[in-house]
Length: 634
Picture 1: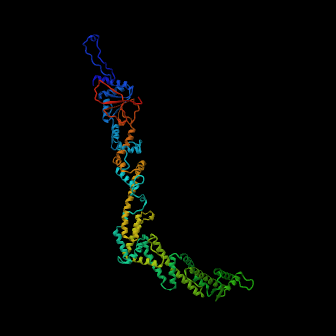
Picture 2 (picture 1 turned 90 degrees about the vertical axis):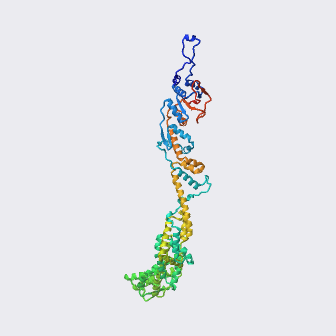
Picture 3 (picture 1 turned 180 degrees about the vertical axis):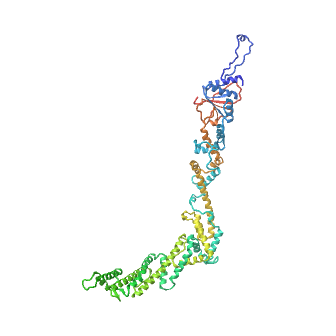
């Protein structure tokens, strides 16, 4: 370095001419050396009093001398280099230590100025920082920075799924995903038997009523389908229930007044017309259980009631009271009669009592028992009358007893049939109402019994119906119809009709619905991973267009690294007296002068070229310029 440059760095004055003696001055031929230019910093400081400058006319060595001179003059100077390479050259020339390297985030490595340069080179990555703000400054930087909650492929998938669910922004477009699918019940693929197997099961079941194509086969299809689709427990219990009904109906008999009345009564009860009347008849027939005992207690007595106004139960109690009085030592009298005697004598005109003396202990007890028989008879007659059975009072006690016991037996047989049909109805209740077989009459029940027994008696058909019932039960899986997907309801309806073609179409629709549901659930899972960043979800909901998101997806991980790097840079102190334009980040605290450059024609972002130019003559000039800018701290 020349002596002049050395003195320029230190700020020492350089005389314009060398010192001479008086003799020398007198010599006209003495040579005069040209005066050296003043140090660059002195000229710049003088000119800075009027404002910022563009300094030209220097090379690298003298630009370094300018900065050193400004510092030597007590000015706080920060050099702003346009590029990291120029910053390194400035540091080397000024004797400063090189900056250390940092791993801030994935793909973001280098010194502060390198990282700032990288961020400035890709402004398109700043959208995420603008949306979410910089990464949490409290989070310590890691070797690779934050991991995006989704990778780019998952983000693209989520955007596609949201677009399919919501259509275009504002509700336009065709939606290919129905949000209601999320909560609909759909069977897993393993629960759907293949179409050929369902066809084989249907053929095995229908073969019990006739060969393929026969009218009987098609006529019986709905009933066979219903019986074959019973829940597993009901399917197991079906055979015994059918046998019970068959036996109970056979016990009714086929001819006679009693059998005809019993069948008519069963039909009336099954279709709901006579259910209350039958309940009353059942209660009345229960009282017949006492008839044998009452018959024995009546002894030889024969009693007819000649006055319909007589309360039979109260009359029986009156005769019991007389018997008790006599047994306790009471006696019959012509005058001053006991209350019990007077009560009995008041009843006797309304009764025809034969074969016993009603005014004795034994006779009074016998009449009381016979009156209770008449009371049971009257109760049964009144209960059976609404059911079309007329029971007239019997003249003889033997006929009365026989008739009551016969009616009780008929009633028991009717109850057996109704109970057995009730069991069958309990098994069928698990079927949808629209396919549930009718059981509102004996002929209807007979059709169910006949068809069901064909199914249960043939081993291959019995296996087929149980398998089909298991399939239906698994498909329903305890879900209410309102919870099932429409495609599942269509599938079940096809099975309940043994409609193989409809089953095949419904199975395909179930597959499509299941794929749609998978997409929605995947969308929910992906969206849940963005729950910590609601602004990002809102942005996706508001706009799912390729124009907005395709560029973002292509640099998805870089945008997350950018967000972390911005936060990291904001926490950094200015590294030293030399920075780059991107790493300056607006922090000029404690700085009196900014020296920006060297520059050729370009102007760094954030700076303006001053109007005033200080061209320093007398120094080597490489054509580059510096901007010397006082700051508010100057």
